[in-house]
Amino acid sequence: MADALHAVRSYALIAALWVRASLTYPVSFWTMTVGGLLVTFLDFVGIWFMFHTIDTLGGFPLREVALLYGATGIPFRIADMLVGSVEKIGQKVRSGELDAMMTKPVPVLVQLCADRFELRRLGQIAQAVAVFAWAVPIVDWTPSRVLVAVSMVVSGAVIFFCVFVIFSTIQFWTVDASEFANAFTYGGTTLTQYPMTIFTKEIVKSLSYVLPLAFVNWYPCLYLLGRSDPYGAADWVRFASPLAAGVLVVLMTVVWRTGVRHYRSTGS
Amino acid sequence: MTLSLAIAARAFRRYSTYTAATLAGIFTNSVFGVIYSYAYLALWDQRPHAGGYDAADAVTYVWLGQALLMTVAIWGGGSTNDLEERIRTGDIAVDLYRPVGVLHWYLAADLGRAAFHLLARGVGPTVVGAVLFGLVVPSPVAMVGFLVSVVAALLVSFAIRFLIAAAGFWILDVAGLKVLASVLAIFFSGLALPLNIFPDGVRTLALALPWASYVQTPADIWLGRHTGGAVVLTIGVQLLWAAALLAACALVLRAATRKVVVQGG
Image 1 (cartoon, each protein chain N blue to C red):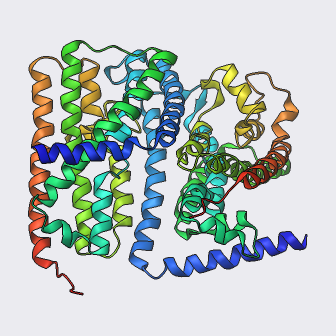
Image 2 (tube, each protein chain N blue to C red):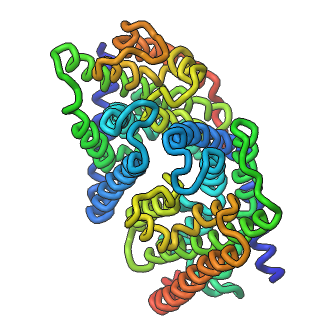
Image 3 (spheres, rainbow over the protein chains, first blue to last red):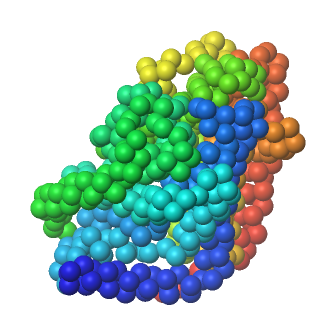
């Protein structure tokens, strides 16, 4: 517990440093924040334009797709802001910075995640929240649905956190393959923007039992919308997101430790 | 000419060094290709002739977009990133007294980079798409038109990226501008969604902008939506944009050069 507190405190200290640094160039900071909001805004406009020609995509109308979109966007953008810079492991290995990090009394993972913390990513989170808010009225809210919604966002952020770390760890073996992780992080959130009904059964199965991205938003959203799984998963699966997140945390810990143990300095 | 080739060849080799990065990139492009293919298949399942495409055209369009993503540097990047860095550090002063013009140098380097990306990051995802979904095969004439159109697209993209990097002569940090430029490029190139299924007003606007050159124009030539004289005409429009924007680059560079002060010591 003391370890965890220490980790959180160190993270906050390093992040605060980068926030202060980024505010040194206020014009650049604000154009980046607004730019980030626009990038993600246009991303949703793409989906909205699709519905200009159709009424439903995979059996889901625009507002329901917006719910899915917000429900994956919020946790993804939060995870990206908090731990996205873990992608830069390869660079740190090459430059030798990782060696310096290992000598400091703060866990390496904390240092990597907090490095170059970008407050401007709040713009992207705001966009996902806005889309989600627009979709909120279609849900017939009950106390249990509120609870599932909250657990969905928290579990989703944990799942994406693990995905970021797991696929970045590969760079301990191949330092220049950072783009590989993008397929699962950015690819993961893009994929879950759509109803799973547009994919084949095999894809949905592997997104449930191999890389549990379907638990980020798909299963909990089915509960919010009062639907059963079109692919026939049991109804309790709609509440299993925290379980999937927990399993992934264990897996991430193992993968990360293996990666760090495998690491040999470049010696330069 | 020999000099340009030498510059381009070295840029080509620089990018071809990182095999793991290239393979990782092809993998990532392919994952996005698969996601968008299923999304478009669901759309064209509802509206089988949306935007004048059939489902096979739509899926082909997805994979062409992934193939052109790096080739045309839609996100940004390429040799103009080096230019930006050298303007920031002041090393640009060295570039200015080389026996070859700055514009010429960076354009040659970017063409070399693009040649590598076309062969690796372009052909790679296209083959994956063809294996997984089966793509529309272009006629030989369409194929030639497509390749010419991609070169024209690259010229337009290079000029826009060059202008953004050159803004660094006047402002401290161009990172914000680059984000805005990539947003516009991704959306208005048709990478996010084919421009021909945009709502009417926006479509007309989007097709008139230079970014339509990046993906929409080459893809339409590949898919045989333009034939004969129309191919020449659309490529002509791309080349007009390229000429106008490159002229703007030359003007900006001239204005900037007058401003550069080399600190001694």
